[in-house]
Image (cartoon, rainbow, N blue to C red; front, side, top):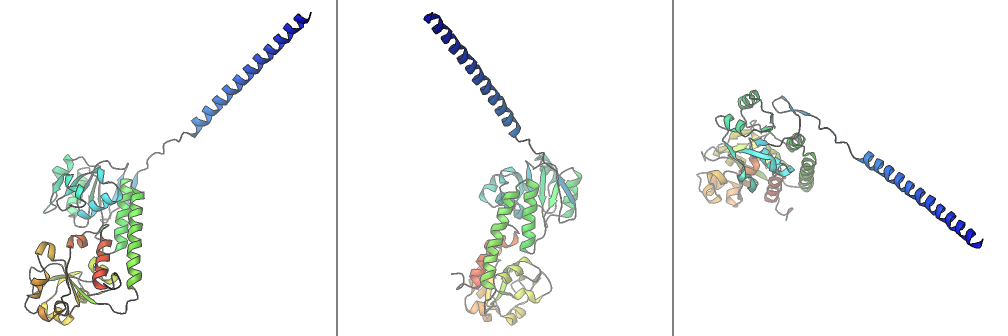
Length: 328
């Protein structure tokens, strides 16, 4: 009798164990299914890429459906922007003058822009986006457009704000918005730092920026409305070239002597080979204050003529030339 009762107890316990085991198993299955449902529900649905439409400097509406995988640059400034924002690995073609950064030499050159771009070479590279610039012949832009290529033209920048706009536009077109915003913020911070240091200077030295001295009796310089004028002014100097109404003009030796600049910046040094020694030997130049004081500075004109990220370096360099004590 006792044995029978013990057997029934064991059976009861075993049944209870099985029921409990089954219940636990079912609960685990339910949790697993629910968990899978939650995982499935949290998988992000890819956001479709929306077409981008911008108006370029020629007033053309340019639409690009997806971020381009193959880009061609027709200007050194645009090439520098492309690399600065992080899209350099997608550059498949560039003009002859695009030589910065160093890696760009590995990108195929489409040749010179003059008298016209080589449309055949450009088409053969199968670009999704061609970036032209203010220096690009509008007829070339129209011709490339007729060939079915997407062409966007940046501005002829004469201010930092216009450069910022170009960088952000290229960032939008290439899908590198974050990189473009970072570059612009860095530039704005550095420009502001210079402006803060120079805004209350007690003395603004007069500065002559020489662009070209093929005719040393009438060298080319920059007047109002030019980026060089903006740079000199922001750096705390007074631009001698601002005495004209033209953005670029030839100043006579007589007028230069009358203006008597305290500082001469030789943008003519890189390509024209001008040096402080050669300038000092020019007839009539010996009586100019900058020459007498030996305050002549060779300068890389490439940096000035390319409206891109490195222009902030130009501003900082000019500021150190014009106000060396402040920027020690």
